Amino acid sequence: MTNVVVTVRVPRTLKEEIGRYGISVSEVVRRALEEEVERRRLEEATKASDGLGEFFAKIPEEEITRSIRESRLR
Image (cartoon, rainbow, N blue to C red; front, side, top):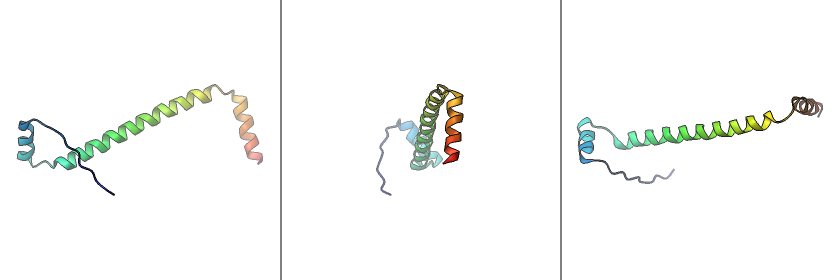
């Protein structure tokens, strides 16, 4: 896996506090970005599943039942 460098600007006072507390900026930023990406993936999946629910709601129940029965016979 190759890595890339991401640069961020923060106020000097924040940088000083980061140093005072010994915070690993790379670990905190990496974790925050991974969590944000996961949140957005879930959001995207939820939207997609909502769309599928609306799509299937338009199909008559009898049609679904018939399709299931036909697929069992194959």
